[in-house]
Length: 460
Ligand SMILES: Nc1nc2c(c(=O)[nH]1)N(C=O)[C@@H](CNc1ccc(C(=O)N[C@@H](CCC(=O)O)C(=O)O)cc1)CN2
Ligand SMILES: Nc1nc2c(ncn2[C@@H]2O[C@H](COP(=O)(O)OP(=O)(O)OP(=O)(O)O)[C@@H](O)[C@H]2O)c(=O)[nH]1
Ligand SMILES: [Mg+2]
Image (cartoon, rainbow, N blue to C red):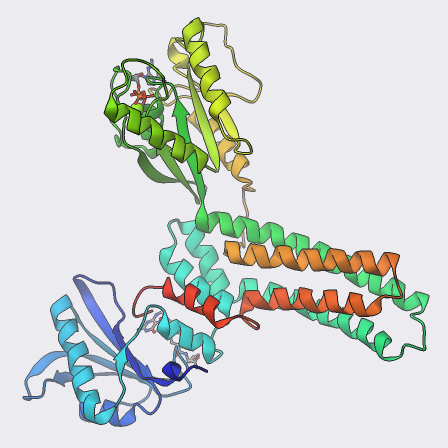
């Protein structure tokens, strides 16, 4: 363990700004003398104790509740003291400063906590595994109810339990293979080989199921970048406003109204969609400097999109020039990014529609056809409706699961093709278990921990 993990730490645990109540919290080893010096006595463990916190001159800084959690029964697993005072930024700063002052004699080395450091200690002291610690941040950052619910499930261990079940099955198979390795003179008999194959197959399908669920969880966390693109006046800004249910972007009949990129996160069935409205794409002498930059930014966004909504104007699609404009945009769209063709202004279109089977027809202005668009967006995102009991997952977890899958695939190949290469098989299974362990933090490099916890807020 790094020496800095032994320092006592202090931070304001509540959000900056004014609030009804604010909390300063201290974590470290051997806090009791500090607690007595600050509060005048040692509060009973895990009970709220009301009283003043006094400055050096004896004046009360604030009156509030002290909570004393002697190790190991605390959030961090160390001694923890919480001061629950009035939630003003100045009074909390005074309390924080008073803690540092008292510490000079009663708790040498007390310092301000880095972002995520309380939760990092909870992880290092085995109060939480890594997936649970990440779920703490995901719960705080959750942007939809569905995301919050699944983060809470991951925090309670739902994801970790699934990972452990897979790990246990993997260990079972490794024991079988390694036992055979230890007795090389006894050829792996057919019965055992069949048993190993069955176990491996079940492992792989359990992994595939876990991957599918983790993908849904990651979608709830990260959402989808959706960019609305098309020629000027197609109704892109109107569509953004309709989806968001608010007048966010300026709408006018003038072509070239939008120049800046306007982004809004909406949610559909709890899946966050980050929808971006962009400048209309055109190549015309009317385009001035400002619009030219807007068009450049539009293309940048299109290239970073998870999905593009290509908006077409049904009142103009018969005009040859308009069709050339659309064709030019189509050529510029990046390969591999799903494109959904959306035909707008159906309220003013004739009977004959130019669309393909999978296209969406709607009126952004009147709000017709929006539900079909929402459903198509969810489908595009790979969202399975009614995914109850989901846990939250991150890209990091998906990558680890994918590596587990690669090693199991190698193992499968070795088992079916080359029963004499048991040492290679054993190694693949070991690597698979290692990749799995990275999710819960059984095997994790220190620099990765640094990256994960530094994204937390201070005091968490
Ligand atoms: N005031 C306050 N509220 C909070 C927190 C906190 O630290 N302080 N939390 C955190 O940020 C969350 C709750 N998390 C916590 C997790 C464990 C323990 C704890 O004392 N665990 C002991 C005892 C468990 C028990 O009695 O069952 C332990 O694990 O041994 C406390 C808070 C949300 N609300
Ligand atoms: N009839 C009808 N008019 C619409 C519809 N959607 C948008 N419009 C009108 O089309 C015009 C252009 O709409 P915008 O949303 O500003 O179009 P835009 O694609 O953002 O245009 P730029 O920002 O210039 O690229 C406005 O007058 C809208 O009221 C629709 O569904 N039906
Ligand atoms: Mg616009």
